[in-house]
Amino acid sequence: MLRDEEEAVVLMPADEYVICHGPERTVLYFFCRNLWLTEKINNAFEGIKLVSTLLLLTMLVGVAATAKLIPFELRWVAALGMLDPIRKVFKMNWEACGLVLRELDFHIPFWANIVAAYFASSSLDHEPGFLIALIAYALMVSVVLLADADLSPRAVEGRRSRAVTYVIILVGVLLSFTPLAFGLLAHSENRLLDYEFLRNSGQLESISLSLRFVSYPLPFLFKAIWKTLRHPGRAIVVKFPLRRHCMPKSELRGFLRRRQQAREESTRQWSLSMRSQLSLGSLGSPSTSVHGLGEPPGF
Image 1 (tube, rainbow, N blue to C red):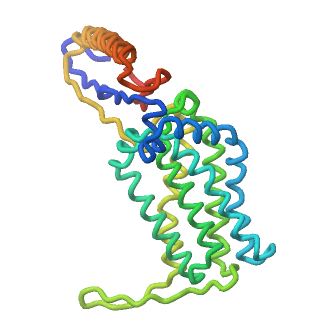
Image 2: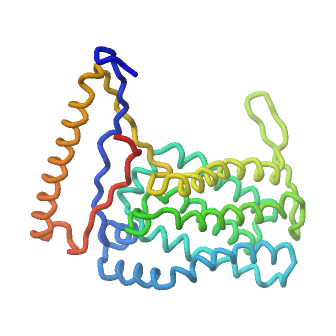
Image 3: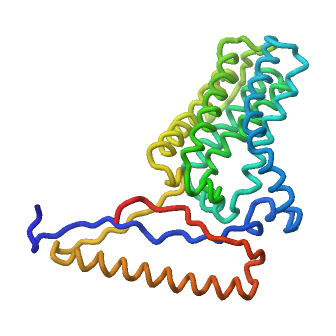
């Protein structure tokens, strides 16, 4: 135990992100700028939420058709797997998406994912059916990386439900690239790519490159599953920095009390400001609500 005169280092969460959320703050509204159309489309998608989640499995149908385990003509069914990622992206908060896009933890797996899909497609000479399956796969991984931008009440209050979706996506990724790795896909070919860099030259193999790059998003998928189960409500990609305070132990109790009082006063002032803005209609829809992205547990 510390004596009263000894110094303690207190790591405190930084100020929370406060983001307005509602129909006018969604990605769909950001692109179409029509509130009525935004609400109609997002409500229609929410009505088929369970169906769209189950349609994620159609990505495997496209891979199986390309491998000729089922009729080859069924490879186009994989296009239905794009419905659920599109539904989720449309309802995301565009301001929260901006926070996610600033993080390196988003860009590393995202671009590795794109490169892996490209080289996998080139191994089959960009066969349309398999390409659609790869696009659906890339969209699903992107949705996991953008999960912090989903500020719907169900997503903010209980992220455990997302673990099932993440596991389905992880299994889909493994089952999609396993046939390619073992040469089970029809017309697949390990194409050689010549390169020259400075005074060095050589050849690269398309399938090998695809498998190497697809290994980068996998740790991020495992991290998303673990965080969703272990720390529900935590942000997955967005980082929340900590502020460090050094003080004698005798001052710690008063510091925490003053910080709590300051937070309560700030919350009260902000609530009053929001009410006045809502009464003036400055936020548009009366149903506009506010959800934070959360902060690390602690003080």
